[in-house]
Structures are given as structure tokens and as C-alpha cells.
Amino acid sequence: AQKVTQAQTEISVVEKEDVTLDCVYETRDTTYYLFWYKQPPSGELVFLIRRNSFDEQNEISGRYSWNFQKSTSSFNFTITASQVVDSAVYFCALSESANAINTDKLIFGTGTRLQVFP
Amino acid sequence: GAVVSQHPSWVICKSGTSVKIECRSLDFQATTMFWYRQFPKQSLMLMATSNEGSKATYEQGVEKDKFLINHASLTLSTLTVTSAHPEDSSFYICSAVLTVYSNQPQHFGDGTRLSIL
Image (cartoon, rainbow over all chains, first blue to last red; front, side, top):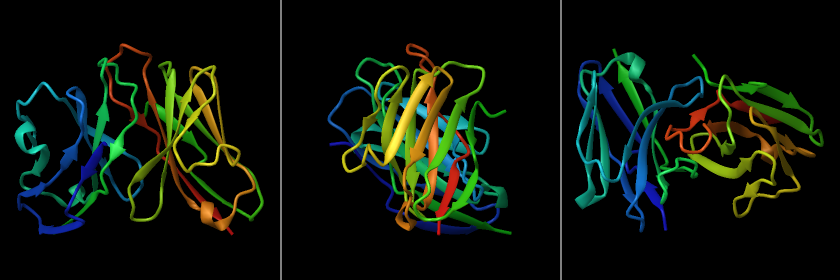
């Protein structure tokens, strides 16, 4: 069965601190995609990143970086030098796509609420 | 800019009313759209997968007669909550994917906050 676990319910940090959001997933498929989405207080979901299961290379995008470890089934997200605008709920998600067509449903984790204080 | 538009963004209505929510893909054709529901401080739960020109596929536990989904065109899917009750109050959000082989992630609408009095 597919499952995404975000053990951290809430994290509070002070601006400029680094923060890592954990994500652990379960799947029996060898081909799958992992995602991170940001949901600010206004409610919309903002796409941050997608990784396929064959690409374990870590990625950095500005202050954001992602660490994909297949051996531990984890896909952790780090925000460096956090800012108040980073305050939001962050969701990790999984989709299984045996034929690499991204039309499959997303299984979301329960989310981590990040609060960054000035 | 937004690639998926959802309307309305906010609805308050009386118990027993039916409410229709629209999800439109802007400047791309979406053969598949997804409808999710999110209760306060909880995760998003998939309700159904909407495919253009065919019947929606509902997740276990979701009443298809209560949550009517219509995907009549490649740019529009609608979710109708029939005879809504207070327990249906939630945040409903749709997503759309480009036509197959596009290899693009799902794009989400801004969501609809539904409050049933």
C-alpha cells in the first residue's frame, strides 16, 4: 500500500534558521514520483518539486534543497535561512506511475505546519 | 500565473442546498482532473478522478450520488455537492494534468471553502 508519513506536525523557527521537513514514504512500485507542495494560509497549493524514483540526485533551488534517499525511503526538504514568508503547511506526496505518464492520483502526507517568526 | 482556475472561492449556504464548484484549466487541455477535500488542519484526501467524456472514478467511501462530477470538456470539470449538510463543510480543491505524455505535475486550483449552515 502507498503511504506518506510526515512525522513533524508543527515546526517553529526564528527567521534565518535552517529547517528540515521530513518525509518518509511506502510503496511497492519501483517506478513512482515524489512531490512537495506548499500551502500558504490562503489555501492554494503551490508546486515545489517533483522527483522520479530513478533520480536520486539531490536538488537545490535557491534556499530550498531536497534530499532523496531511496535506501531509507525518505525525501526530506530543507529551507536554508528561513524567512517569514516561508510560513505555510508543506505537504509531501507520492504517485505511482508505472508507465511514466503523470496522470496518477497523489497520496498526500498529513503535512507539516512551519511557522517562521521574525 | 494560475493555470487552473476554481470558482467560486468561497460559498456559504443553507443545509439542503446543492452547490456547484467549477474547475477550469487555462490555456491547456486536461483529460484528467482530480477533486480533493481537506478538512481543517488535515491533509488532502482524493475524492474522485474525473476523466473527460467518461464517468468519474470515486475513491472508497465517497458517495457518488452526493458528489456529482461532470467533465464535459477538456477544460472544465464540475463538482456538485447535492443536498449539502454541515458535515460537508470543507475545503475542496481540484487539480488538472496536461494531456497524457506531457510528463508535467498536477496543477492545483485555489480551492473552494464551503460552509453549510
